[in-house]
Length: 74
Image (cartoon, rainbow, N blue to C red; front, top):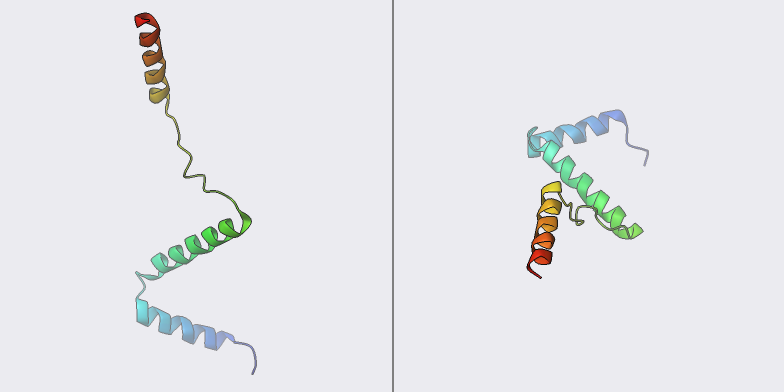
């Protein structure tokens, strides 16, 4: 049993293209990449940065205005 050569890789790639089609391959690759990234993050204990809420300047301004109104009414 030897290693896989270039001919075998081309044959496997050709079969994959026939099975899934050329349009589906980028989606499959993207899904595999995201899966690998999330697996690595889970193993290393990192948390997703997407979960952190990003506060926009408009939200900050609205909070300041609310606090000023509360102070005026008190």
